[in-house]
Image (cartoon, rainbow, N blue to C red; front, side):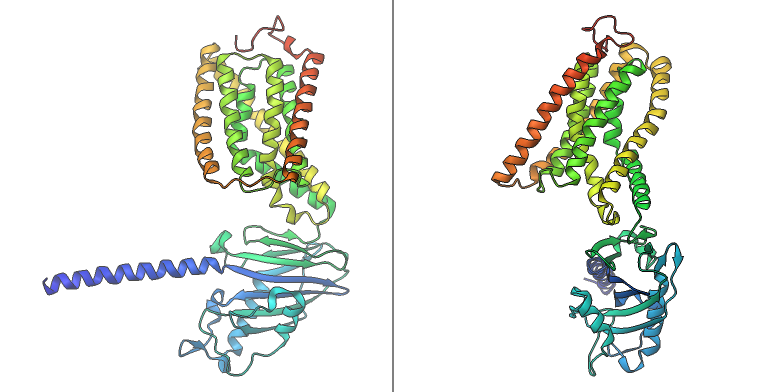
Length: 443
């Protein structure tokens, strides 16, 4: 092989090695992209104890000697790192930014485990670094202890992190909050979380979770397609109101149950629910094509509403960390947000659907075409989610699992009986445009 060709291959090998090394470093970086912190509220004082990875402080410019930090010359850089922590992690009392009265910091080895508890972390930060300790560049921690004077221990406190916003959700602040009274609470936030209340008032918790409920329903495309399938064949506000009311009651029932850990546990259940939600779209769309009876639609809507309630709960569980001590208020606020989101959707969906049915896809043929499109979308979703479910290990049920299953099956049967009775009592099958109880909506 010629020298020129060897030279060309050498450049390619060097480039591949550089890319591989960069990918390895990026992978290692993401594994450790966590800032650990404690916040303790005491009479007249708030304490913030923080441990941040050393690689986050490139701008501090720690002096280096033989691939290790020159600890004898590191004091100015450590002060810059401490200033960066105070700038990027801020505490507020009743919406007012707190100003530190004292702050100290030190470097720590990556093998140190003192931040496993608050007392150990507090003691560790106050201790000087042992002489002769070697800390390699980007492979240790900056630990800090910051004190803030406060007005009252029962104020509403909040926290915000803006550390490395370019990392987005990769860099997390794992926070353990210690209130003056009550049990400590843990939460995980990022630079995209905004200002997070540590001990929110009931009103703050309710408004926050109402917003989460609205966001969840507006971003849940499978739920939106199901709602569209529900109303495609309906005529008149009485029919629409009866079906939507049943769906609301049903999903609220399982949403409440899931929030109090009454839902089946295990890795298999979330993909099972997601698959069932996709199947509900397919079923409703096919029923629109074949012909719909409102009494049966009310019943099926209630049963599928139970499944969708489990789906709503997944957007709730991960946010309970922001509820503080107002769990029930937050739960109700989330449910109210879901209903408000549904009203917003229908306020746009129903006029658009009326225009489509009148000018674009009129008559029964138009309803069949629109339902077929939704059925095809739901079918592909169902296959993809079923593949995930199939690959998920199923648990070995215990006696407790059978009890939970029996309770939910009994509740579903009672709900079905109640919905059938309600449909007959209200005579919903005689709604506008239905001259006889047995006439199908799709006719």
